Every structure is written in C-alpha cells, then in structure tokens.
Length: 384
Image (cartoon, rainbow, N blue to C red):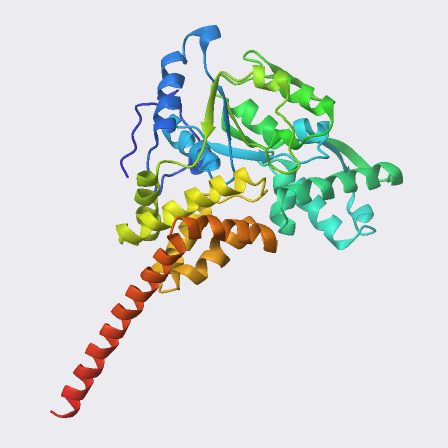
C-alpha cells in the first residue's frame, strides 16, 4: 500500500508494531475533503514554529457531518497512532489521569464477584500499553462509558472493604495519558457534556502547548507529537457551549456542515457502490432539505451523511426509495407525528415525494423488464 507521507509530522519516527496498527488506514471509500487538506497544511506549516505550533484542533458540527472520519483521516495524514476518549456527564479526574488499584492476593480475589475477578485479573496481566477503561471494555464487552462506570464502582467497593491481603498498589493510566505520553493523535469526543468543572480544568491544563499532567507516580509532559482533535456536536441535546478556557487552547477550528450535494453523491457512490447519479442526487437533495427543515422547526434530530449512506445503500439493494426514506432518515430524525408531518410537507412542497414515487416506478418497471426477459428466456429453452 502506497502511503502519502507529505504531511507526516515526524517522518523519521519509528513506531512499534502495536502503534503502527493504531495508525488509521484510509478505506477506498474515503474522499479527501477541503477541511482535511486545510488542517494538514496548517499543522505541517507550523509544526516546528515553537509557540505557533498547531496541535489542538476543534471540529464542531452536527451529528453525521464527518467529524470522527476526519479525525481518523488526520491520523493517516500525520502518521500518528489514533485513539479516542468519549466524554460523559459524570467524568471525574480518574477518567482524565487514570486510576490506582490495589493488587489483591489470589485468596482475596476468590471472595469477589466473577465479573470483578475477570476485570482485576486482566488488569494485573496488562503490560501498561492499554488504559484501564480499555481493558474493562475488552474483557466485559461493554462501551467505554460503561467500562468507566464499572471501574469506578470497583474502586469504591475496594476502598470501602479495604482487603487485608493487598500486595501492592498499581497505577493504570487513562487513554488520555497514554496518548499524551506516547505522542498519539487523540480524539476527544463531546467534552461539552462534562459537568464537573475540575475535570475541565484538568483537561485545559493538559492541552497547553507545554502542558503536563500530574500523576500519582510522576509528572508527565506533553509529547512533541501529541495532537488533540476535539469533536463536538453543535446545539445537541445534553451538550453545553464549549468551555471558554478549553476553546482558547484550540489553534484551528472547522465548522462541520453537510458537504455540497456533489460531494455527497460522490461519497455515496464510493461508499455504497451505487452508481445511479440521478437517484443519488435526489436523495442528497432530500437529506439537505430535511436537515434545513428540522433546524427551522427546532426538531432535535439530524439528517446527516450516515442516514444518506444507509438510505442510498437500501435503495441500491432494491428497497423502495419512498418507503425506506422513513426507516433510514425521517424516523431517525423524529417519530413525533406532528414533526413528521412538517418534514413531509417540506418535501411535498418541493415535489420531492413525487420524485421518489417516480424513482420507485422506474425501478419496478426495470425489474419487471428483467423478469419478463428471464421468463422469455426460460420459455425459449423449454421449447428447445
């Protein structure tokens, strides 16, 4: 595989095999955007300019606008291992820096619940490469938020019970610390949901250009290759305006909206393999109109690129364009009857629902034609 290294920030850096595996590999469906090129150029241009260095990026926009895809693409472009942390409302400082866990002798472990034993044994066997939350995720098959909550409850339980057979205490770094120490590209998803101001202060301090993080065992300084990409939804339920101090640490920001219709069609072709440009153009126009209508009527849901891809893929597989519109797009935005009616009215006023009826009629005609040709072929063969 030929990899473009034009924007590599440390081309001479030797990654371990495990780190190399974390560098995102662009799929064939990935289309380089203007935002991606602009960010890469800015980072590369300023990388060795001291205080002018750009290493904290903010991508702000609606769900499905491609923020995480762009963050991953930057990993490939910059040649840095990619990892992420998904923020949640009840994050505390242990989620920022990591956790101290007691190492309990085997006899004490037997008195704990099966899931707790599984988690602790996996932690004790770890080599420090993975964060504690990631280990819990893997062994229990839960989300990152659930892993953090389970780890917190385990810590509380162990502190309250104070086992007598504690052999030692061991520190397990967070995903943030791992990226910060080793020089990875870290995507910080939705810091706007964090409620505890102390957590935001710790995050603010870490994102200083010459910042550091105080751990129970040491003070670590920001690796020169560490890049933070903050991704956050705009005006999304449960979020607050981005903390001013955190926003001040950002050196480059992109406002992420739905791309132009032509780009949407191009990406859908690449992603789904569906090549009917006329149909894709209509589907993209509907997504754009639904997005605008939802905003204008304060409907909380979003019509984005994910909905577009899944809808186009369903149509490509023979689903009714009009029927699948509801299951792939409208009901993802809202199932409220009044709000659905407003969305339908917007489509009717532009003649787009009639357009979908025409798409379905043409698809049915084409399928009937194929069936007729197949029947004629069978009849000819039976008379041979």
